[in-house]
Length: 112
Image 1 (cartoon, rainbow, N blue to C red):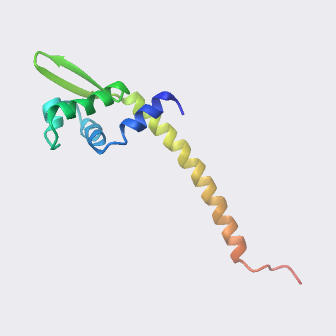
Image 2 (spheres, one colour; image 1 turned 45 degrees about the horizontal axis):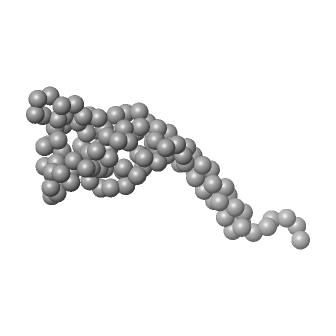
Image 3 (spheres, rainbow, N blue to C red; image 1 turned 45 degrees about the vertical axis):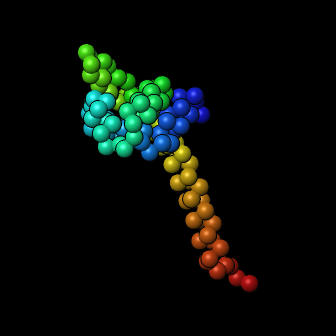
């Protein structure tokens, strides 16, 4: 796995950060809007945002006193590609396992 994938999966391992990414998937939002649903102190929330920014999943822009966050699509597309690749591998393995189970369950029809 690439360093980017590792960093993205590590960042998304936390439920607060997953919630932020989910909220940003609906459009840009200010830090205060993103922090509102979470019962944590603002400095703690800012550390979560920093993790998301450091791995490239989120970027923020400051205008005056307002910081607005945006989701970055490229790392998410890389995650999606890796997950799709894994899904295909496991689908193939499960299909082969199912075929094996069927052959073991079906009595041998060859003459004795």
